[in-house]
Length: 343
Image 1 (tube, rainbow, N blue to C red):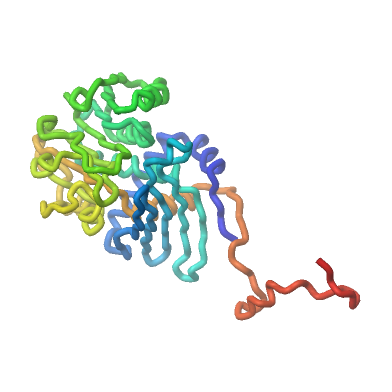
Image 2 (cartoon, rainbow, N blue to C red):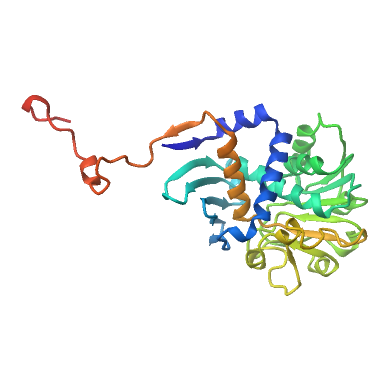
């Protein structure tokens, strides 16, 4: 039997546990996976690109569990009432190859993406960081706020989006938090005075939302939105001024802010394993060029499998008397008392 986690099941689980608690636990689980970096069989995700979007497969495995996520990115979907990103995940037992868990991963990816940002903030942002700037208040904004708030004593959130409705949505969702919410009129105004900056937009194009003039010593930047070839969010002139942290360099060179560049970078596992400090000086500007990596999905699915009990179990794998005789499983039952079966 395979454990099935649908959207209502995950919603109930997160509601019982609390979003902040889930984000904190995922942050720890993802960091623990990066500490075990050498135990994983890794590769860049496989992407099939279309004029209007992308569909990707993201596999990774250790000696015990294999995980793979199916995920799309279609920026035009919201105009038709659909999600920009939708995802499904599978977790399997390596010894038998049998799937253990099939899960929705649209919501889980939102949680693990923010938890990954928080993990890097834990090591790279200044300990006294109190002001978070959000460039883009779409699907990631609330999760980024709560996850980073688990790691740093945030007091003020400065935010801007080109879509006023997105800003209103964010302000409404965060109204009950003990935070000063400061809507801004431009990207420059949002970033002014910020200790941590998260850039997360959906436009698939080369953008320059963050420019060198906006940088200041000691800042930490989470560049979350650059997740496919041809899509960036930062002015290229920002990169040489930063200490650049990435998840998995072969993938980030294809689709991150550093695509097409030969700048030196540090993979985060070097920091997680204590091989170098996350922040090299109080004045350093650290940049997390985050594109999303399958290791984070592996950690999230294993965390879910270990913690969510009582999910529906479904029969997705045939249980044959003779595993070599699948044909027999598709035959009608023998007729009773010699009468021919009718359908």
